[in-house]
Length: 435
Image (cartoon, rainbow, N blue to C red):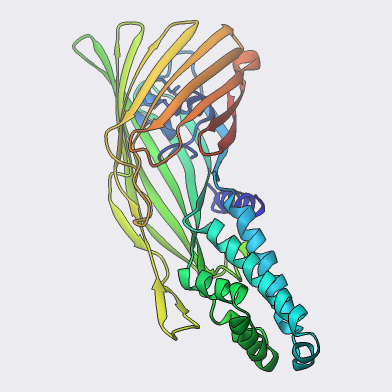
């Protein structure tokens, strides 16, 4: 798991460097994440700006300024142990090249059987690793958010900085690599010719015939905005509306290289990185029906944007052909509806995306639904649980849970964790202070 952990750490670190949310979409808030990723209707006024800006206007008379410093989270999916296998590939390649580089004409003449056996064994091991690696992917997400919420009877306001990141590592195995290596493994004649070529020209004589690639794609989107919210009565129904105009900066990483030289330390190289800055907007509405019911609707990133990665070109050593690797990151409106039932002891919530969650064009879209519950047996302690599913079936379904502590109702510490199918796990934490 070394490289995927490096990716998560790199993504999370980048969020903070960018002055910066894990969720299915564009926000992260530990309480809501623990409740199945719900929060469009059940979020609190102090954290609502991260989810649905309309919730900012739902502060009570006793509520004061709330500061989130910060909310952070990360998630990993690696059902195929891809990163372990890429590490194995690197080890096998090193061993394979050592065998080739040590070959001499003297070895071939004096010990032809031993020389061929050693070369054939190394080729077979590497071919097996490539076959195991074919078609596999790993995913990681990381996020952070900071918010200062200031309630007011006339117009509530919040300053918010949030960021979300996700990355994917995948392999593209060239069948001709496997065929070439199996040919060496299974034929003394082919192995002999390869050994003579290697003795004369070194490891390049053989490794130039290996052209499988590994791709690492990552996007970090950072928002800097000011939210405004107002509550008014529509008949006898209190209705809150909110809006967050924001500056949005995006960093894209397109690390594509030979699988035999893949190194996660190269992710941040300027050769593979580009950025883009633009304007976007979030908006939302929430309404209270009686004392116990709240419904809400949020729209994140209402301005669509397409941003291209850098164009990375790799030359095929076997054919001499140059292949272009490029992708496009899609920022699209994400509209989510939610409902919550609540009293002094318990909150029940449900959210559903009305639009798809986009990402890189090379990836499948997702669309999430979630349910959650919070029980508050003590005024300073809460227990939470939930479930989130992708109705498109392209992301892992997960169970979530967490706890919240609020000593003196001033300092709030929220913790969450999740586990789901395809070896998906994650965790998050949030610290907020009410003045």
